Image (cartoon, rainbow, N blue to C red; front, side):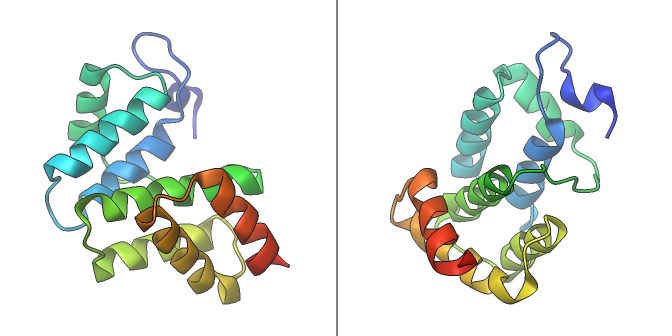
Length: 144
């Protein structure tokens, strides 16, 4: 990842890779529905992006290699955001499950614990459990 992957045209510091992976998840079924688009805008604004910047990234999305963050908490946060995107349309597709599992592997999570973590994330997001609470459950029940 080069320096430009962290900067938008307006000079805002942003990890475009993390956002672009959310775009990829939203496109796994070939289209972005209105709920997924709303969630992309919500997440993009957390990065400090404007609506036009978000739209530009959505339309210019291209294949990127996933470069996960260093900390366990940030890796979990990325997967939490992906789980939110998967559930934006309330339908979990096989392609989406494969994608979140692939990101978990690439982030360095232990293979034997990925299914339990993905289940925890999807169930937690479905039940509106906050990210911090899920992270605590993950550390206590899955990482032990």
